[in-house]
Amino acid sequence: MTIIKILGTGCPKCKAMTSIVQDVVTENNIDATIEKPRQHWS
Image 1 (cartoon, rainbow, N blue to C red):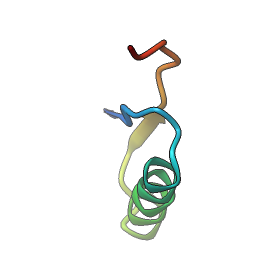
Image 2: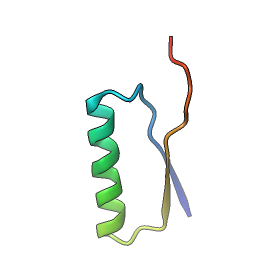
Image 3: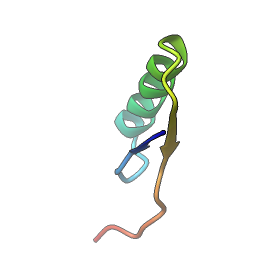
């Protein structure tokens, strides 16, 4: 299984990228987990 980590601050572009990645994984039946690590960015 592949782990895909989406790193970002949660801005609209990060959310759009997460949605696109989820769609690609689903459409192509890729065995992957998408993670969004919660971290404070400075």
